[in-house]
Length: 225
Length: 114
Figure 1 (tube, rainbow over the protein chains, first blue to last red):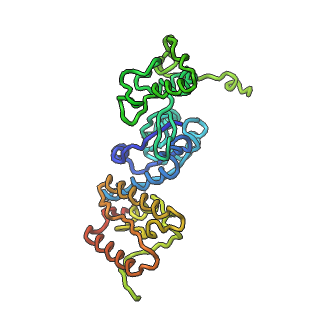
Figure 2: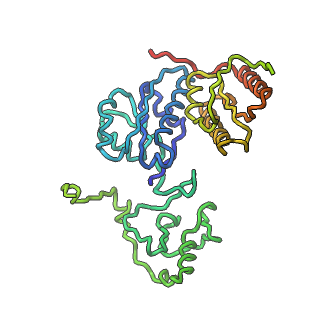
Figure 3: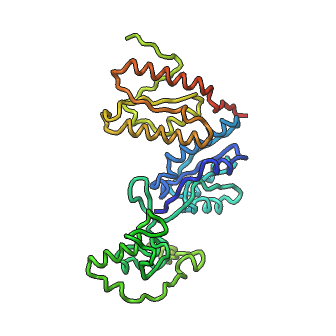
């Protein structure tokens, strides 16, 4: 899933400081799963903003709405009848949400209520870790099922580097050296020979280096399936 | 026992403090409560195992939120006592009321829509 962190409340307050009627728009997708932008978090943000405004003795009117997703136009269209009732909208979806909203409702102001961070998963309740770099040419199977693109600080294809100590990356003591894990796993499986060859250059054009990407599925566009 | 405790406390009964959520505590502050406290069972004696421990975590979260907003976190508190400790209940009520009196009225003012 896409993982995000909530923005500091003072940052959100600064964004909406001039607005009196605000909509907090949550998302039932990834940000609900990572506990940052679902129903519960949207209501908590609304209440926190109200407390802050009342503390300043200022009037504020906040409503909460949570969409199934904010990354599909049919769901974004569900607020078309109410969006003009608000001066601004704080989206608690990932960075896709405020953009889909801004594209559909060009006159309105949409603020991001979260900082979108990475593609990952929860390794335990409350801790999420990055697992995918979205590079567009997945070759996890070549590395014992572990991704060196997302999980090696240098995205090395031939590792580990000299910064690996006792299975830990020099960049952060909380980060494992994924190359140490890859080599350990391959050795245990008796497949270390798979890592001995020299891999060709990775084609980074399928990653962000090739500019913004598009995924086109002709059969879906034609509506055949 | 005939113990007395301050009459300005509004008691909301729950089957377990595990039912309390962050939004309930925030709503109380938002709607003008000068302080809110949660009186849960003694730690280790929750009938539902972790209800009171979870409630404490939620209280801590709200304290952090209030601090971020520049509001005294002491306005929200968690206490643990058993249902047999009537004297302690009255003592906590007095303690909390004294604390709030020292802090003064809530900085969250009632605002009327223009």
